[in-house]
Length: 116
Image (cartoon, rainbow, N blue to C red; front, side, top):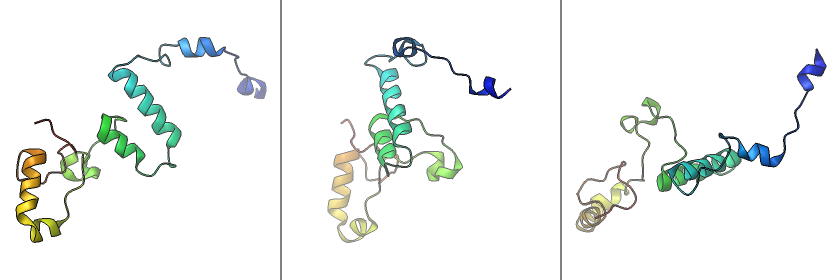
């Protein structure tokens, strides 16, 4: 019956926010995941690379990984330096990699900043 399909339930904002799947998890990883996931949903198809930048910074939203991502199934954490830097500015290129990442390898899976 069409009336059953259109039937709605009125729920107070307080009751809605108190639901276990909705309630803010607090100032921890679970709370950060909730905030970034909601931001991703709100900005979907309207924010360019915002979701990727949030992922690099926080690890959220959690994206599916697999062969479609290239890079051995991992989502890259950073852009590579331009090949022209390795070719034309080799000494500074190698020094920058060593200073930033502790190795001479320009790796997509390195974080933008490394704890050294």
